[in-house]
Length: 157
Image 1: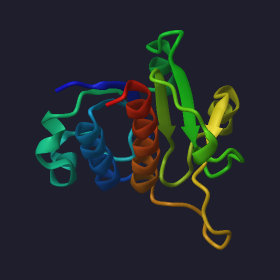
Image 2: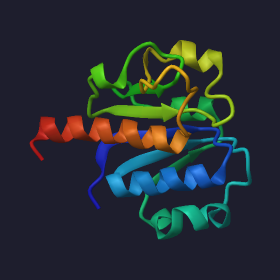
Image 3: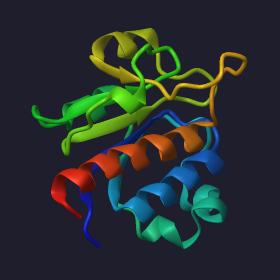
Image 4: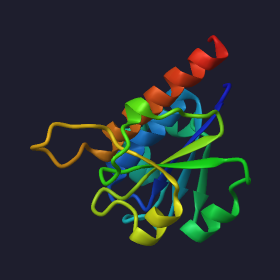
């Protein structure tokens, strides 16, 4: 399988079903995935098998025990893009690049302020004012679809 240069990173996932959905998403879009621990559940194939199904073996996943170890693996030219409801920048106005890693936070709390402050590029999916946010797997799907759309347009795929 040919993987795009885009990556999806999931920070300390709380819910195995959402992580399983995002693993399936990464496999279907052909992007590599980073899982940043610790997870809010025992990280094991058994916990993910029901939602990731047979896509677990198709996805290329790197598991990092902490954010510190994740950061240590990032090449200097890779850009981190945080998907957060707290951003004022719309995903629709953002120019994704082939070397981007889209990061989503925990379902229960997003990412800590210390991490939010260090990531320069932050985007949100505009929603109607009366709602808080989307499910993290749904939000990751929208962001990855938009980034992929832009990359395919750039590469004439």
